[in-house]
Amino acid sequence: MVMREQKRSRTTGALPFNTAGKPREGDGGREGTAVIAKTKPKLKRPSLYRVLLLNDDYTPMDFVQHVLQLFFNKSPEDAERIMLQVHHTGVGECGVFTYEIAETKVTQVMEFARKNLHPLQCVMEKM
Ligand code: TYC
Image (cartoon, rainbow, N blue to C red; front, side):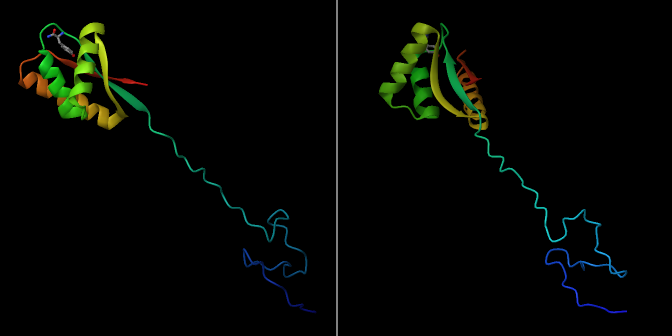
């Protein structure tokens, strides 16, 4: 029997002919090719949430301004403008954040208001 030297597949190391001298077909004719699974880079932008203050008849105006400066880093001028917007229209925007930050802000404001016995309401809404 004549044994020819065979070159192994670079990718699988398989020999191209079997011991009977027949071409291997176990790979459906793809011998020498490699399948590389593409994994999609799943980069989704996080959803954003608007944090809002709601109006009520009892929370003092200066307390609301204080909240806006303390928890939302607003200037005294912006804090007054937003407070008046809430006072006149019923609702005003404190800021836009990702879910966890928005949730934390709402919790902090609500706790601060309750501790000071004010009925101030702070909520978040998906944009
Ligand atoms: N309406 C309140 C008042 O007249 C002031 C106020 C403003 C309360 C904004 C809540 O989110 C608020 N004292």
